[in-house]
Each structure stands twice: as C-alpha cells, then as structure tokens.
Image (cartoon, rainbow, N blue to C red; front, side, top):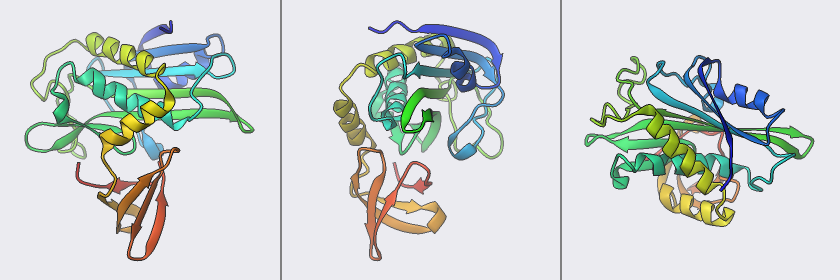
Length: 243
C-alpha cells in the first residue's frame, strides 16, 4: 500500500493550492484543513463550509516522479467512489448516490441532498501531465448552509449521525489509497454502473433541452440524443436528472 505524507493545517486558502506547493518536494501528498476560505468547486464556483465542521482533503501527485493514472478523469471518479465508500461506514449504501459528474448525494427520507463535492485539477507542460490534484469536501457536522443551499445540502449530523471528523477523514484516505491501486478499467466500469445513467433522460441546463443518455465514453463524457440528433456532454456541462 502506498505511503503518502499527510499535512494538516488549521486554516488555508485552499487545500488544493497548498498541495500544489508541497509537490515541489514530495512525490505525493495529502493535505487537510479545519477550514479553507477559498475552496473551489466545478466551473469556478466556491465550495463553502464552516470551520471545524467538515472534511476538507486534497490528494496531490507529482506525475513526473510517481506512476499515476493514465486516464485523468479517473481521479474525479475515484474521489466520488472513495466518498461513497467512507460514508457507507455510517449510512446504508442504498441511500448514497453518485451524481454525474462530481457530487455525492444522500437521501434523508424526503429527498436526495448533496453531502460531498469532488474536484480534480491537472497541470500540463505541453501534452505531458506534471501534477494531478484531487480535492474533496464532505459535510460532517455543519447544520446550516445558507439560503441558497439550505434545501439542497445535508451533512452527517443533519442526518442524525454523530461522528468524529478525523474518523471520516481517515476512512476517506484509506479508500483513496485502495482505489488508486485498482485496475483503471475496473474502476471506470464500477463507477459507470453506480451512476446508472444509460437510457436515463437528462436536462442540459444551458440549452434547456432534454436528451436520453446512450453511452458513457472513457473520458467521462456522455453521448446523448433526442429527436434532433446526438450530442456530446462533458464535465463542463450542467445537467439535471432524477437520481
């Protein structure tokens, strides 16, 4: 099993940014924090969370020094699978859903609400990937999420589960390390089965149009179609669908 140096901070701007800095002297690294004030989400959004209430973790790898994943989309996929695996220690796995492309939702008995977000970032020199960064946030003990997210977000504590943040953090790290060593095709097929998107109807938000998902490509993009023809939907597109 891989040995990865772990740094923990009380307060940082972003665990992803700190991990990038530390990779100048490390092959790979874990970075966690009690609070991050510039956490990033997909499409430039801010990942907000209270201090000392949640898990904020980043895995970083210097791809010039350590063998890494060939298919870079698998970092994001592994992040989601690791969150699902860690949460299943506290919640029945049937209540946990991975939502394409990078979120994890949990049912509270009324509806599915977001409990985790995953973001992978990669630095390239030409066509050569030099660094890969995987950031993960999990809502653990936070109870309020502000007006915009109050009906959309949840946490372990809101679900009635009392647990220690460090316990969740260690379970997440263990899952990441295990999954990073599994065959890439096995990881991809496992994720594809779990998101269960084939033949589902999705709404492409920017186009206000509906499509049926026909297949999922190895790069994580979706091939979908409607009466007007086929379209490729990638990680940068926003979609809605029933979990």
